[in-house]
Length: 212
Image (tube, rainbow, N blue to C red; front, side, top):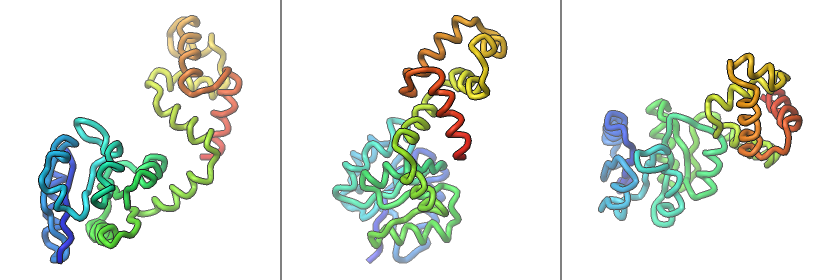
């Protein structure tokens, strides 16, 4: 009996191409296609599916937010153009069987889909190694990187200059803004990344650069 697969992705061209690739396989059957979380929840095919291929980024939310909800009754594999090991790890912890990059070669994609259909872990390329590496890192370092990623583009410019050892006046000159504005940026940055002072921020930034 063919594994019934429901595809949830908001890009019609990718979704259609994926469905076409799966349709050529006798042991795999696409039972439905949807483009949002709302459509996924309302889809009659969800209850009939054996496996959901779920995009991480959707118009009405993140696919990662509903993994635990869906995985309670049907196998879930995330699909994405990106493979941040922290996102992958969280998805797996929430119940996803795998995480497949959208640029995965068709033959590998089919192999991974079949692994998931058998209840096995399905990860693209070297993703398993990268996830394992992230697990070995200190929790505070992981949180620090995640918080850095949430900063605005201007805040990241300030952080980059702090990492170079520049003073607030030098940062202000480099960005053509006032020193008072830089101080405000630094205060907000420290709050977001969870660091008590500018010196500790600089130390963590240097440590992060050395570990990359």
